[in-house]
Image 1 (cartoon, rainbow, N blue to C red):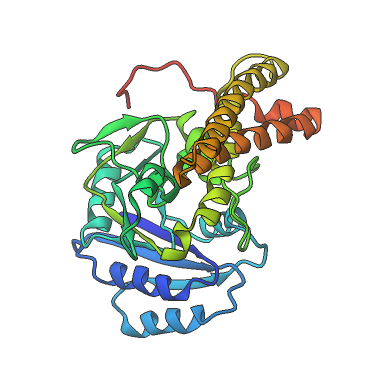
Image 2 (image 1 turned 120 degrees about the horizontal axis):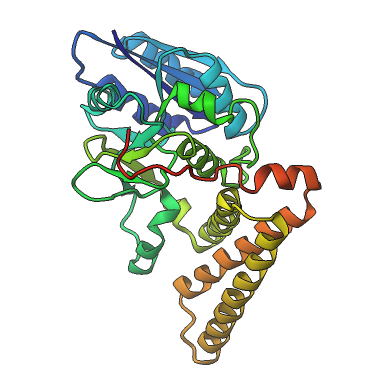
Length: 329
C-alpha cells in the first residue's frame, strides 16, 4: 500500500493552522493511498487545541493526530514528528501553507515512481495577505518561494515548506542522530534547519522538484515589514554561509579564510551603496535590506570561528556531494 505521513509543526499560529488543515481536508486521493497528518504542538498557548479538535471532529482528514513536543524549536519538533510516524515517505508541511486538492495524491505518485530519490518539493507560491510593494518582490526568497519551471528537474537544494522526504535517505544522511544548525525557536527568527536537511539528504541521493505538488504560502502583512524582513534576511545570510560550509571539501581554516575574504568584499560594496544612497537621498528599503544578508554571512563566520574545533570539523564538509551523474536514480 502506498503511504505518506504529513508532519505539521506549529507554535501559536492557530488561525493559519486552521486553514492548512482545511486544505488537507479537501484532498482527493485514490482508495489505495493511506495517508496521515500528525500535528506537533510545540508548546502552543493559543487555541491550537481547539483548532485541532475542530478538524478531528469534522473527520475529513482520514488519520489526524496530535502530539506535544516540550523542547522548543522547529528542529526538535520535526525530530518528534519523524520519530512518531512510520511511513516510507514523510512530508514537512508548514502551518501557514495551503496545499492544492491533489497535493497528497501527486506527492505519493511522484514518490513511488522514484523510490531512490532522497526528497522532492513542489512549486511554492507566496500568497500575500495584502499586495506587497514592488521593492519587496526582490526578497520573495525570504518566504520560501520555489519555482523551477513547468517540468520536473533535479535541484541542488529545496525549501522546507512541503519537502517530501524518503525516510531511508533521512536515516542514512545522519540528521536524525546529529543536527548542526538551529532553526526557528519560539518567536526567534533563526534559519538553517531547512538548508541542513536538504543538503545532507542531497549527499546521499538526488533531490528533485516537481511542479505538480503546488503549495500556497500565506504571508501575513506583519511579516512584510522592513524590520521583520531585516531580521529574517540576516538569518538567511548566516544559514547560507553555514550551508556552504557543509559542502566544502578542503581544510576548515582555508574555508574560513576564503569566506572572510569574500564576505569582506561584499560588506564593503554594500556599505558604499548604503552611504551613497543616504547622501543622495535614495536609500530604498530594498537597498537597506540587501546589506542585512551580508551581515548575516558575517554572523555565520563568527559562529564557525567560535565553535569548538571538533564541532567545526564535523560541520564543514558534512554534506559533500558524491560523484554521480545528473539525473541518476
